[in-house]
Image (cartoon, rainbow, N blue to C red; front, side, top):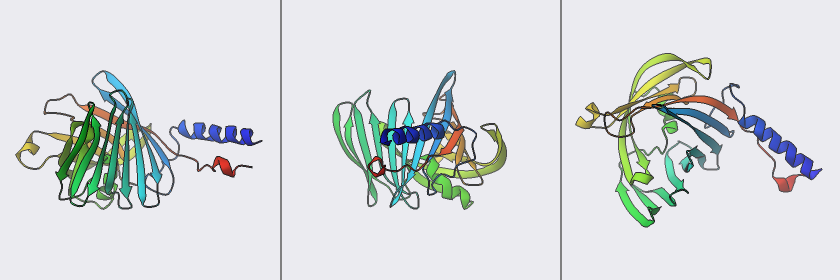
Length: 239
């Protein structure tokens, strides 16, 4: 009976993970949520998957993309506290951690130990998903920091609110607001990326990114699946 219950639970998980086009799931609520994005750079396509869980002190985001795993831990206001980066193929394991008004990067990169500090004077968002409240409160401009552990970098960005558009996302119409991301100062004239967030709940639904110097080939991504994962009992609690 115990084994049968375990099989049934696993079946429920599989059904939830395969759900596409179901009722939109509200990320950063009380439930565990899975998000899948299709990503395209020129003729190359891939996918990336997020698992978002509520914790006692905030949220935990797991991102899986091309064999690389990132884990981002936030407080209740979606401010990032920690970002883990794990690339098994290269043996890189890195952690960015908030320490007062600075961020510290530790771990191993290219087989060498890493311990480096970065001064920051504002918000840290370890993922573009975390701008939910910027979107929902209608902020026209927001400055924040993003981190790239594998590049040993902390980048200051500015998000500028643009127009509202009706998109087709996962086969359904979606009202979304467009944000332009750029960098402060004169460099902002030469580098920009665009992100679309759903008006109803601030969820990221589409991107057009420049991941590199101006002129770099654009990376496009779009939400293709979202689902609430079932809350499962612990195996030890099964009869």
